[in-house]
Every structure is written in C-alpha cells, then in structure tokens.
Image (tube, rainbow, N blue to C red; front, side):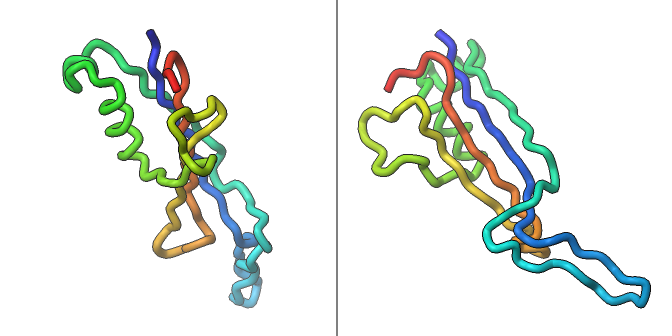
Length: 119
C-alpha cells in the first residue's frame, strides 16, 4: 500500500509591484481587489510513508500523516463539514503573510492525501 502526502506551496502578492521613480518616489503597491500575482512559481513536494516511518510511528499511518501535515501549518479544510468520509478531491490549506510585507508577500500552502488512503 502507498500512502503519500502532497504539499504544494506558492508565493503570491495581492498588491501591484512597487518601484522607484527617477525622482526617488515610490509607486505601486496598490491592493488588487482580490486578484493576485505570482512571486514564486508553485512547487510540490511529496512525503511517502516507508518502513522507517512505520517503525518510528509504530505502524500508525494516521499519526504519521497528522504529524507531517501539522508541520505545514495548514488548517483550513476545502469541504465543510469534515465528515467521517472525506472525498478524494478534498485538501487542507493555509497561508502565511510575511511579517514585513503583509499581503504583498503571502505563502499559500495546500496539502492533499494521495495513494491508498481509505475514507
């Protein structure tokens, strides 16, 4: 059986690019009314449950998944409410605003379970 966690991260801005004019004034940085621009292209990594994980988590694949997902900081489910059976297309997501740039630089993360997970 294959248990995999797929983590996708992208860095976006919800503000127009800022620049400096020839006179030294700053321009840009306006709110984009919910639109965004990509600062860094999305990247996807995967975590696959293996024999070392089975030993470390004493064969509890759910505990392994919870620990791995908890480290990503995602907390928002894509479907409400989360019932006993989660559909295949469901995922968790979360975002982190840069403390200096706020909504000018936001890292968005989503997590999806792929492989042989049961509902």
